[in-house]
Length: 402
Image (cartoon, one colour):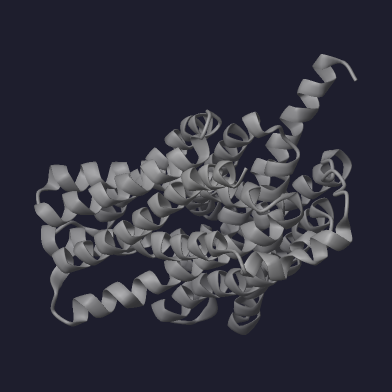
């Protein structure tokens, strides 16, 4: 294979893997800017249309845990193709139905198929590329998640104004179908693993490793902290600063903007020597500083700065974290580890609404929320620093034994 054809194939592979995260996040967030239209279409209230969004998250969370446990037993390419086919089908079902029950079921199933897009795409982003390239590749994939979320929030209401809600959501189904054809014909499968029987025997060994549980806890606690700001910042701006919902949403969206810009840069940094752990730890330290800014002073410049920095922190602690964990336990465990870490993070994100809502209900106010978020972020940082300490001691122990 010539250098030119190899470069084109590499570009096509990265583009298709990025498209998986674009599609997953577009399906997830595509409903949020057309809640009023969906409310009228299905004859429900705002709680009902909010449940359409939650159904996707619930389906994704349940399926992600299953994919995490069994994903390494199946071809990543086959899982992606299956996920794309199912996503195209359930997206079209949601677009075409006038029944709220059918729409709710379609959203749940659409979320479940999202797990077939995320974990296998991340796995291929790790195993198909050299170690010195993986950070940049996963950085581009993470940027795709931002493109999908932001693009759907802009384009779905725009298309709904032109071709109606059915046409707008069918456009997502069409995009998925086109990607399905391209993935089936162009996307390579993962390289074979030398001993599949050994790989199947690894889960028990995995659960006996302290660093696995340490990273799992860091994923859950870290996402709980970060989704505290993502979930509650708009309410903070409307309640404490008197912002309209539109302006509050605009300020909160700055986090997604900086994540989109920072993800490729952070990916490049993760490819430097010891870059994985340093980037994730640096992003975790930045999260502590973010909540420190929010807790110190209810001053709008601090809030804007914290919002911008939270996007950088997320970019450093999402894809690089998956890369760090996915490489740590061997190629035969990549999908399992990535899936379980993503499940833990999803659980943390889901808990952010109720945990910090409880803090507010107890009369603590938003300063108490930011302090609680900061405490969780600090725990994640301590877990990662302890992991660095253990890794540094391990070579010395082997030298002493020799």
